[in-house]
Figure 1 (cartoon, rainbow, N blue to C red):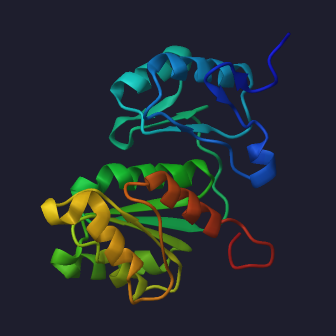
Figure 2: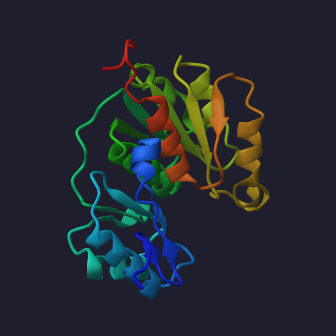
Length: 231
């Protein structure tokens, strides 16, 4: 008896209907999955390609290699630990998502957020190394920030940057804490709490190191709306 559509026996049940139901396809979280499991998932996806790209997140070199064995043309972005298949980016619609990275150490999570928003169909711009230790750096990018329909702010250490940005722009701010920082940052808990306690309104917070979640939420915020200011 044939398995139901999307079922990879003993491994996964792929949600092929999610793009129709929610407007965005399912992603594959690679961390914790074995290379063989990922090969089997990739094989099932190859048998039924969708209209939108499937994003593979948290793919280290070993897991990325397993996906690429089956989908050799997948786009692989090692710095973001992300793959996308099919590799072509969609034509952008809706508004602009600006991803702000506090420091270079936060860049892997910021790149995950940026690429996620881009593969979900938004124009993106990445602003790097504008943490609050040099406040002039973010103030110099205010024009770019104010052009955004959603801003993703990725920061570790004290996590103060999202509140600063939210005080400068009218767009919603999606705050992404990272596990970057010395001991008392508690692997991202300190910036998470700072962001949850931001005094500037309009800040939403996702989980520690969750660039995918931050980019996805920003893409939804900046999605096209009939009659709105976005095309």
